[in-house]
Each structure stands twice: as structure tokens, then as C-alpha cells.
Amino acid sequence: MLALIKLANYLLKPVYKVYEKWLWIQIKNGQFPRHIGIIPDGNRRWAAKMGLDPKSGHLFGYEKMKEVLKWIWELKIPYVTIFAMSFENCLYRSEEERMQLFKLAKEGLEELLSMPEIHKYGIKVHLVGRLELVPSYVKEAAEKVEKTTASYNNYTLTIALCYGGRQEIIDAVKKLARNVEAGLLASSEITEEVFSKYLQTGNIPDVDLIIRTSGEERISNFLLWHIPYSELYFCDVFWPEFRKIDFWRAIRSYQKRQRRFGR
Figure 1 (cartoon, rainbow, N blue to C red):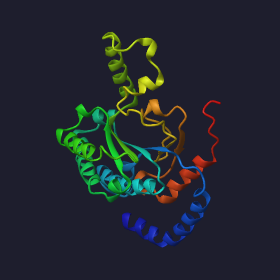
Figure 2 (cartoon, rainbow, N blue to C red):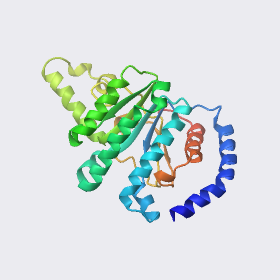
Figure 3 (tube, rainbow, N blue to C red):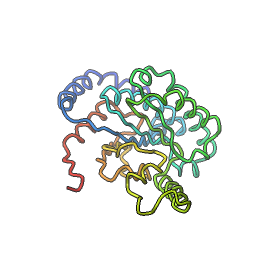
Figure 4 (cartoon, helix red, strand yellow):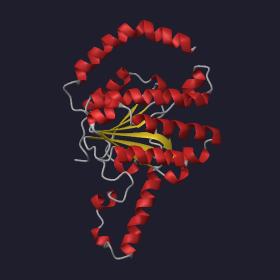
């Protein structure tokens, strides 16, 4: 099956190139989102469709993520947040699959340091989530890449690992409550801006566009504080087969929408 898919893609490549150029003409002069959130869903289902071990889909998904990040940075989009692994995944997936995902996370974090784009564009890397649930070797890799890119401030790549939006908000409320109890902050001083500083994701801007693959139409506890006015784009393809034309379709859809922000 995988060989047939590769052959079909090869034969269709000239058609895709023409379509890419047509899409680019439509989007190149429009407004691009400032912050994109990605829910890369469907790795296991894609692998099963290909006749592979479902868990092997994560490796193909990882390779696709590197490709998509380059597309995003080529458009000079300054903020991107990747939903690499949810809080629920860290609790309920099998130990074998979790260890595989953690190994990929470690390799990915280490590979970021050798990616020319990280240093070319000045991309700060930030890892968020319940990191007490991840192995020490992942935390060490995260600390190294965060330290190395700490002085970069042109772009920000946030990687959400063992992350849940509700959990992030609860943790922020606890920190805030402790400061109020200690007299360091008055309850009357709490605003959206103040509260956001207690979030692990910090002061990254709200997400303009969320892209989710695999045809599922859910947020799945992703960046709940940052998505009140996000535009949502649900794509029917599984993540490993996500193409540049799918990405540019998402951008085109975003550009066609009227964003009123409640006004």
C-alpha cells in the first residue's frame, strides 16, 4: 500500500505543483496569521491504513512536523504551537507507546539545535506541559534547547508535551491564589493580562488559526486560554499525508474569514 501511495504521489506531482502555484497566487498578498496552533492528529490511523504497525505512525508524523514547520517559517509566521502529546495521552496510552513518544520528543528537541532555520530565523523554543510526567532525558533535552535559544526573539516555537489546557489554567490559579494569600497581589489587581503571566505558556499571543488533521473536529483541551477567537480549520487528511496544498488551503480559508472579535 505504501509503495502504491508513493507511486500515485509521484505521478500526481506535476499536478500538485500547478495547484500549489495557483494557491500561492491567491494567498501571497493576503494577511497571514500571527500565531498558528497545530493538532497533528491521525498518525496511528494512517499507519494502520498503510498496513504498518499503528505505533510506527508517530515516526512518520514527526518527519512531517519538521517539514510543516519549515513551511510556516517560510511565510514569516512568528508564533507556532505544536500539540505534541496531551495530558491524557501521558496518563492513558500504553507504556510502550508513551516511551516511543518520549524517545521521539528527545530526538526532536536535540535535532532542533542542528536545524539551520532555528538559528537563521532566531527561533526561541519553549516546552510546556506537566513535565513531571516525562522522563528526565526529555527534560534535559528541553532545558538544553531552551537555554541555547533563550536569546532568540524573532520567532517562538512552543511545544506542548503532556499538556492540557484545563491543567494549565488550574496550575495558574493555584500560583495566583498563593500570591494573594501571601499578600503579594490583591484580588482587585487580577486582570486577563495579569492572569496570563501565571500561565506556563506565558504571554504568547492568542492563536489566530488552529489546524487539526484527520477529520476530527475537536479542540481536545488544547490552549484553552489562548483560543477564544481562533479560526478553526479541520482537514480530512491524516497528519503524515498533510501536504503544502493542505496548509495553503488552511491559510486561504483563514484569509477569507471576517474576524470581528465580538465587535
